[in-house]
Length: 290
Image 1 (cartoon, helix red, strand yellow):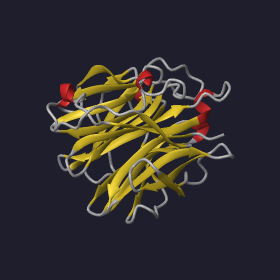
Image 2 (tube, helix red, strand yellow):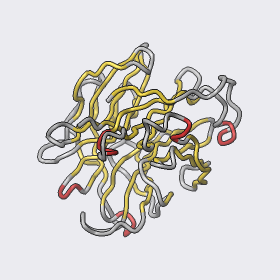
Image 3 (cartoon, rainbow, N blue to C red):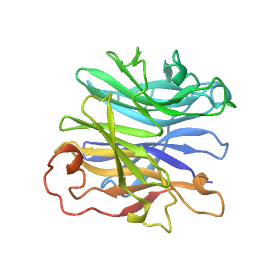
Image 4 (cartoon, one colour):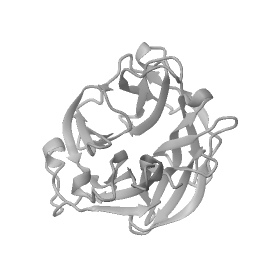
C-alpha cells in the first residue's frame, strides 16, 4: 500500500526538488526523489538512496548543501529496527554515495535505545543536528520518554552530542533558523503541526499548535506527520509546509500516507519570529501525491 512521508524540499535552478521516504511492496523503506516546476505538481524520478547492506530501511532525509556538495542525513534501521543516523553525500543531488554511520546511540540513558529522524542545518560555521531518541536498550523495552537530542559537527561527519535532551515529549521535528530565531515544527499527529522556538537551539519554548487538521480537509487528513518547513531562498521567509498525512482507507490509517502541502501566504508566524513581509492569507492543504 502507498506509504510516503518525511519530505525534504529544495529549490534550485528553477526546479523544486523533493527527497522523501517511501515504503515498497517488500515492506522496506527507501528515500525517493521527485521534481516539480511549481512545488505542487510533482514528477517522481525513482529511488535516490537505499539502506546499505545488510540494513533494512532508509528514511527521514534532511539535506544541507555546502560548497556545491549535498549532505543527506537519514535514519537507517539496524538490528531489530533500532535506528541509527547515517550520511550520504552527492555532487549533483541525483547520484549518492553509500551511506555511512555518523551518529550512534548513547552514551546517556536518555538516548540509549536509538537515534533517528535527524534535522540538520549549517549555521555559525558548523553543522547542527536535532534528532529523535529515547531510553531503553532493545526493541521490546517500553518507551517512557520521547526526547530530542542535539549535536554539532565541524565537518558533518564527526559529531559531538549535547549531554542532555533539549526537548521532551514529541518526535519527528524540523528545525530552521529564521531572522535569528530557531523555529521547530513538531509532528503533533492528531493535534496537527505544533511549533516551538528558541534563541540558541538548546532551550526551547513550546508555542502550541501552528496548524490543525481541521484547517485543511478533515475528511482526508487523519493527522500530521513529519512536517518540513520550506524557506524561500530569495527572501529567506517561510513559504510552504510539506508533511505526511494518513489517508483513511479502511482501518489501515497511517499505513496509507500521502504528502501534502500547506501554503504559508500570511503572517501567522510573525508572533513567533518577528514581522515578515505581508503575503496575504493562509492557504489550504493540497494533496500532492501518494
